[in-house]
Length: 370
Ligand code: SIN
Image 1 (cartoon, rainbow, N blue to C red):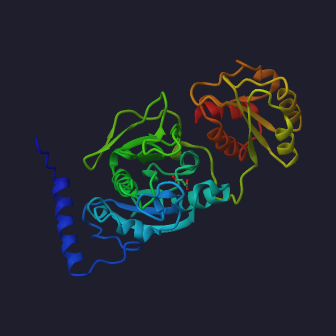
Image 2: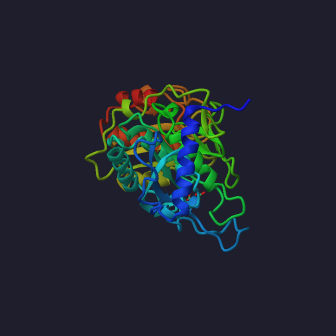
Image 3: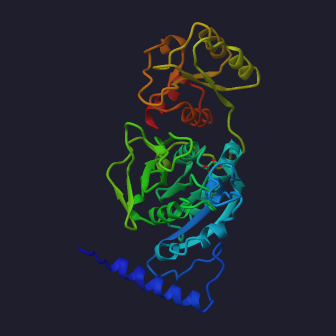
């Protein structure tokens, strides 16, 4: 049965009006223009562009490897999806233009501050961030802990550059804007949407180097689907986030140095010692199994802790709980267990935790809260 709602009729009418406007050449520049009147019933969504493959270009339409990320500006990304005007009044801003392997703490602070500024405005209903997929999960978790609003924030990317046959960027962007303008997305924390799926910023991870269905929340599952111009939610995250989180980056220009050391057979403490010498305030140990520590690594971590460095035991496995006092006696060692956070997300929580305290009991509580 065909479902027709007042909202969709209004959207259709707005779209028809917009089409007429476009035909008379009266449409304004996509990057700066809200494309319909403020009382049109459509949500106001700002797209903050940061680069990545969604803004990438290749030499030919069949180039999907060896293209250049972060080339196309936000106005062109918006122009490529005229359907956006049917679902939101869209404005665009180029916050920076980078491949996401070059993301830094300073980029995150800049982005979080801009998101908070915008969401504090009454005339902004939601934010979409276009982003490279390589570190999307880290940015999503950082914002999940630092955005001070319940309004939707959706991070989106693409696995194929904008010049590719069947580029996934346009449909992903369309879905992300629809999601950011959806009342159903309010209060759900920072979301990541690609490939018609909605994932929670806390739990999503990239699972495949190159396929379009790379983003997964293994075992715990994604939150819902984007289908037929609508968000369909089936579950939500119970860990605290956004407006409920205790972290305040508004006056910060930098974050404490936290680094990751990797567990593997025959490993040693050389890299760990170098990181501590270089000023690390926290170390995430991406241990084997349930965060196990080798006989070669453990004394290095103990020494680091004696120097005041906070040690978090995480796991390279990718699923499951790293149990406190399981594979190591955390009480005795004064270490913290990462719960289910993977090493790259544990790094983010520890950085933010260290902006508030160095008390390991308080930090452990944060790992069970966020
Ligand atoms: C990047 O992360 O910037 C490049 C890869 C991608 O966006 O898929």
